[in-house]
Length: 228
Image (cartoon, rainbow, N blue to C red; front, top):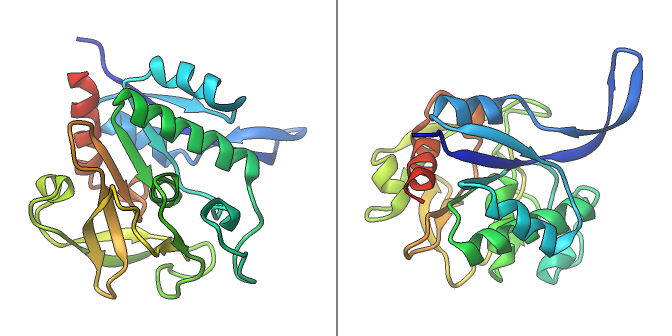
């Protein structure tokens, strides 16, 4: 049986390698490594042109990961930017929201990681806290903290115990979108995972599984992708 194909959204950023200094589609290597370790093939998805392209891309995938990265532009959830909110990544916001919409419309298994959880919440009508202390290990350093699953959720079926997770974020869910339910929390009450109940496999986690060794969440995504 062929391995499922999991698409992962990417950054468009200036980059330097060898003699080159050019715009590049970038993705930390931990993401495709995590997908491969979970039993699937990985495909990078750089920003493209709008909803039609997103639907065509998602139609060719067995599953989708929305990767971590820049802050979501506050206008997307009806807020003014805080002084501590990062610069907007409008092209990426538009592309990843279109990918999320296409995955939800088609029933494609979807995992949001960090920013990916935040975008999933925004896509469904939720809002974000624009700055949160204590969820990094310092500038450019991943931290670690405990997340506790909510019994009876999809996430709890994958990771039933409290777990230490690698974390690096300064924004988080504020008002949870009404279709979503919280499925894990940090000790300070921060929503650390949220999911969409129903037939489709839709889960967002606030931490960075690609920086750890626990593959249970992505193995759940891959199993759902294989069933399709």
